[in-house]
Length: 393
Image (tube, rainbow, N blue to C red; front, side, top):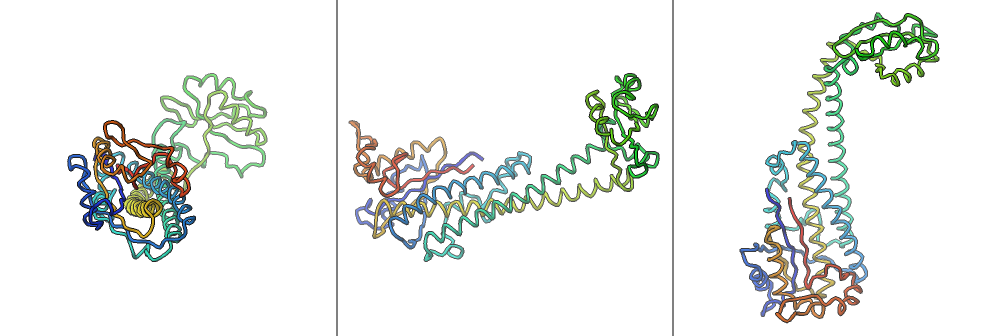
């Protein structure tokens, strides 16, 4: 599915002769040709407005929170992509909001008045959204970490069933009863060493001198394959660490003496158990990822809604009389759609926008910089009207 670009635009109802909201929406719709995008109404409740200082602070908080929302949406999307092994078609089936495509949710957006009561202070709504975002992020992260751990354990056990004597499980190869157990001797310890076949003769010549107090002639050949010999060597315990270190330096592979109960059959049962667990956790991760994506996306759009409202108040003042629309376009047509908006509504920017000799709108940063900074709206990427652009991939 190709990326979709959306514009959230808020304008004073004075853009229409009557000043009525419906007529203002028609004016907004007529500004962008249907060849460049489609405009839908975007309903925003009238929230409780506090002091100017509070609004400026909330505008700053909402910038950071919106970035966090987008980050969580992107992370969950990437996690789902990994879970589905990059299958984009299956991925799009999971990236939905309340079982609807994201674009359908945006086109028919309605503020969730049950979860986020509009009569509550904006600061309280921001706090609620922050906590919900953190909870979604944490829940999804924990479940995907659990899946990744299970998958890693399964892969590790599966690898131990194959490979050469330096890698594979020794449960079906070595009889633990034939080896010296750690608690059977106060002074001696037996080590298993996988030796490349090309180094077999050199091993037999040098293993007794590679470290102090290696028991002479203690090397026992336990098994061999096309690549390695597997030997058991007896060493005094106080020099065991040095012996293992010297083996690695000589390119011999020390093998840990780990034997599961039940031998080969026990390992096969453990493998089946892990395979069943991996499938179970995979399903849980998929379901939680789908739900988490939906919750994070809804949270993101609610935060964007608050950003639009707060900036609308700071820009256009009270009493509130504005219209908001969402314009659906795509990366290829977005520039022309934005150009149409600028051409139609540049005058709303007052002294911050002027026109060149051909009548095209251009920015006049110096004249409005101090005024905009005073209400917390910096001149960087300044638009003559309330405008937010975001992309859904």
